[in-house]
Amino acid sequence: MKLLADFKPTPAIAYMFVTGTAFLFATSTVVSRGVHEIIPPIGGTFWRWFLAAMIMLAFVWRELPGKSALIRKHWRLIVLLGILQIGPSAVLFLGLNFTTAINATLINASQPALTVLPAWLLTRDRITAGQAIGIFAALAGIIVMVSKGSLAAVLALKFNVGDILALTAILGWTLYATLQHRLPSELGAGVKLFVIFLTGSLSVLPFYLIETAFFRSVPASMSALGIIAFLGIVGSLAGIALWNAALSTVGPNRATIFLNLVPVFGVSLAIIFLGEQLFAHHLAGAGLVALGVILVVTRARKRV
Image (cartoon, rainbow, N blue to C red):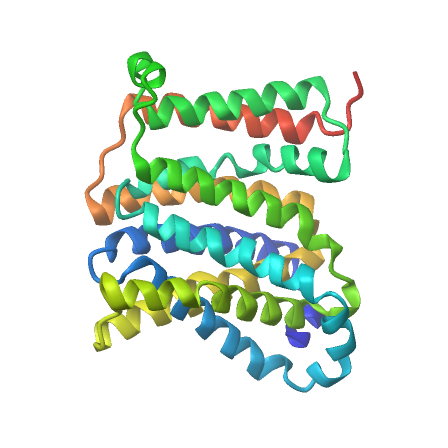
């Protein structure tokens, strides 16, 4: 990963990279939904991220002896970050057994707005009035989507279990986004990813064994291997590699804006390849989520 850290693309290429990241992240959700009858959720998650960890190991193994003291010192945080990164991935994969890729993608779009909450709880970062309105708008958008715009469903708390699992996954990732910066930069980006991927995949291993013993196992077939390889290499590592390469040129603030393309790509791919339908409640909910994200981002530095 040192190669990526040293690579500084031109602005045009960097913007192509962050756009590609959004496309790959959206593709990952759509593919996960499309193969949910072939690949069990926990097994798919374990092998996807364990594969990613092993590939990362090929890049960073020479650095590990020199970073071992730092890894031991921060092992609790590393384990927690691994759980918060990979655990929600398993929860979302499970949720995609019950909900559509469109729902999961649009719910995922609320993550930038909802990340403000754990940041406030854990670091006491101030939430402005505009951000508070943005958070409520994003939550309202999620409620509109998961209730299909039905007030009766909201009052009766009748929600699709897949949508609830998708929201749970997003909340886990917001915690990860808040805590990841506590790891020392001296570890290096590549080593950080390796230890997080490894500990995270190992954290779901017991659940994978239970899934295999009592429910269903990952099929021993070339198609299953291809799906896991795609999710692990293209859907995970390639997106992260493009993202990291682009950050040196465009910076995190501008790059994050491009993640708003994830629901655009996700919805389009789900309609084209999965035959899913886009309804009025999706548009209304997505509009509220987009408003929430805009308010949270643009009002971050304005005082009340």
